[in-house]
Image (cartoon, rainbow, N blue to C red; front, side):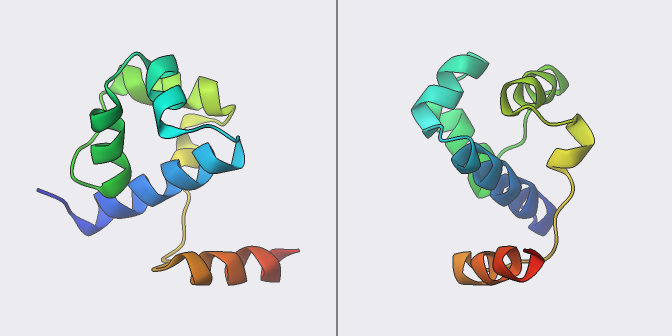
Length: 87
């Protein structure tokens, strides 16, 4: 079951992963989880354990709380416009 919060967290993880130039497969390998598990996390259909969160923050080189810092952005175009407006 996915919730709006899970989806927002998943989008944030996907955004951070892409910023680091990592594929889902590579990040899943580094996290030692299945690619399908990472896909579920990124789409909001699943959530991670605390140990996965800790490893994710290390791999993405962010503090754990930064994974939860997001604004309500509904599409890739909105995200791009948001990023451009911040520069």
